[in-house]
Length: 170
Image (tube, rainbow, N blue to C red):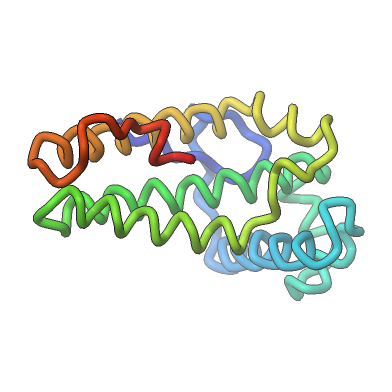
């Protein structure tokens, strides 16, 4: 089952509205700029700086993300969606599940470098992100599909039996 999550403040099971091409572009630019600005200045950076870096007005940012929490959740959802898509692509394209696992781990390492570290966020922002239904669902899907890759790699004899999904996630 694939659930599409809007990176905005809507719930995990809501169907995102179809966006015009310019709105989709603005959304991508805002999320990219947020990652850059928050990596440089921290997650408490002014949202005006994010809008400026995205090349949009502050009203455009607030139309999509009514507050900082919604923007951070959007960033995390986008990261999880990209990771899940890469995981699925790897399992479809690689003959050995070990190769799919190595590919996914490489992509995950890139995401870790590019995303602000959630552990450094203030408690209220971390709690809001962890409690978001969309984030929870995407994490559940990612873990379940990664578990399938781990088991398949073990079954094909390319991954030791004592290595679990939790070990791979760490």
